[in-house]
Image (cartoon, rainbow, N blue to C red; front, side):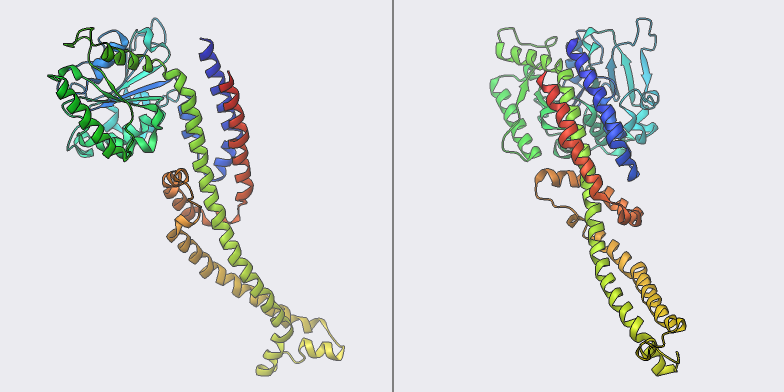
Length: 455
């Protein structure tokens, strides 16, 4: 309980810091910090995903110690189900529909709103009287399938999984020995969806239902197949740990299989560590989100500096042109039209400079700056914007894999901002804002992170 109180206190401090330090900076660019605040809401989340026959629902029932989710070899449930405890003893709302869930600002599921009614009818929150759910919630998901499209489901399944993975503190990805990583949606999830939304430390890989293998040779074959598929999907030579588990209630194994029993229990215990993993997840999400924002501001600063460099060149041309126009413009005009009668240079030479001798030189300076203004407005500015959009990747230094990954997430946002807000971006002092962002990352957040981990 004391640890939970400490975590809650840290989360409140983080929220206060974000609202006081970062919200004003985000608002200057017409951006919202809501995405950073969402992981701070509600309670720790454990997301269970996998193909339809991997035993997700059976595993959840065993963790909770009661039959809550329907089980079966074929697809039995096409809903995203959030499992939590009732808010009070007399809470009669056992099931809450998806439309209510995504519109409840107290819950972290508002990012699912854009998916609309096609998802809402396949989303629900179920309240279960299980002490296991007192400190965290579990999200059960529809099984992944082969050859399925957004049109088939009515919504983009993988994007929904991505949004849920982003806010979840633990992700359990389950396979079964009959389809060890060969499902099309599983491949896409591991290849792109999860890397874009969740850290590797939050993902637990599980080969479930291993008791259905006829012998050890079949198990080794399934395990090897899964490891090979994981190496292809993750693009890594080092394979993450794969838990070997089975359903205790339906297993043909005896308790003599101690190593597998131990892995089964270890995975269950890992689920209970979700509250401890939450703080690390929150710090990770805030750090990532703020660094993405910092990279955008960095791009805007480069965009502004390059334009200012061009303006300095135009300014030098303007100064030279103004000098020539002031002292020689009226002379040239006099040579061709006889106007003015006495150019400024001649009047100065004769020592009889009058106010009217300044009219044409000043008019010449005005003409120079009007021409330069029109040049900047009609040619230099639109050309700079067009060139910047065409060479977007040169606006930031992509010297590390991490910065390159962050840039991939914000690149489209930078393009949109330059397209729609170019003039205001050119007038803003981005370097001052970058200093405030760096102070937030290097001092405020780091100090709180170190203080939290000392305890």
